[in-house]
Image (tube, rainbow, N blue to C red; front, side, top):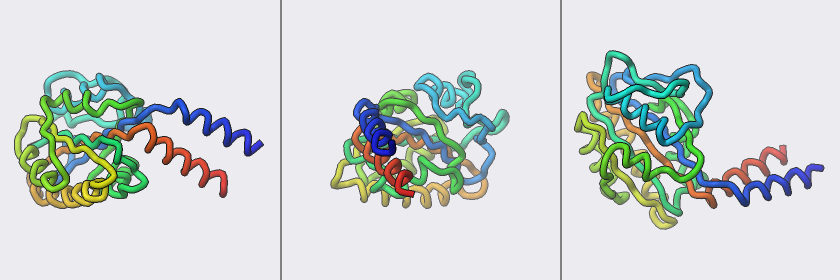
Length: 212
């Protein structure tokens, strides 16, 4: 029976799609965005777009979402960071993995989308600036200094995955210092995990569960 269940699971993975996760991070003075009691993490591009608009006071947000803006306070800076590419594998990027799977440590909440929607979400904030691992921290700090929502992106491959993950960790420290105690910076970290990486992670987790 166990072998049959495992075989069926592997068959299902063959048709598995990519996935996109948005982690909402708040640096500095807290309270600009908050976690709701909703357990409905799954949403759509339109849903995330409505959240961006609500954060910028440009429209209404869709109902029953996991994160919402405060009614009276606005961020002093906000940026969307897109991480995508064949090298995005949460198993080998511990900093990014922690940000998209756990709350706390600046992470307020998450939204998840089935499929590869990184570019669609970045476009909600306008044309995206392409960065590499070396320019990631400086580029994000520059964009976060503006009150207008903007976006940056970095392509990840097998050669730069570790460097990107390291720079994301450095970015957390830099933004906390930049925000200080009197201002707030919001980061929407958009991580697009391709089908192969997502499948490997799900397969590994399933095998670990079955071995217990």
